[in-house]
Image (cartoon, rainbow, N blue to C red):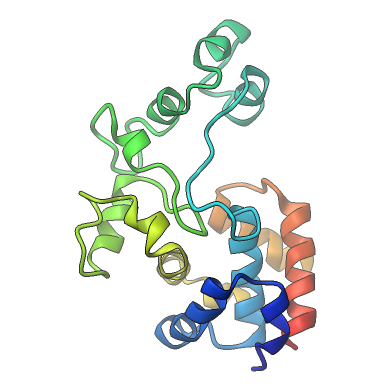
Length: 197
C-alpha cells in the first residue's frame, strides 16, 4: 500500500503513527485505511481537534441533544457551558457514575473516545493510568485510541464490505451512533480511497 500520496493530506504526526496502527490493528488494506482515515478526519476536524468541543449555543443544544434540552429555557441555562453540558448529556451511561464523569471522560482522540467504560478498556492497552489521566488520550494517543476503538468495534470487517455509500453509512453509525456528518464522511472516504489505491 503506497502511503506517499497521503503526505500532503495528513499531518506529519499522523503519518508517522500510521505504520504502527497498520501493524497493530491490521488496518492494512486500502479499504480499511480509507474508511479509518475518513472517520478520524471527520471526527477530529481534519486531525486538528483531539478534544470534543462542547461549547454549544442554545439552538445547537436543542438540535444535537434535544433529548436533554427539550425547551428553550433549559437549553439557555446550559448554553456555552461545556462542562455542565458534558455532565448532563453523558451522565449515568457509558460507565459514567460520578456527577463529574461526563466532563472527565468526554470525547478525546481522533475518533472521540467517550465514556468511562471506553477509557477503562483502553487503559488496559497502554502503560499509563488513563482513568486518572484521561487527557493522555488527546495528547499522546489520539491515533492509537482511535485505532483501538476501531478494532474494539470490529470495523475492519465492515470496511472489507467495500466502498459503497451504504458501507460508509453503516461505518458512521458504528463510530458516531448516528449519521451526523455523513456527507462529509462520504466525501472524505472517496478522497482517501482515491489517493491510497
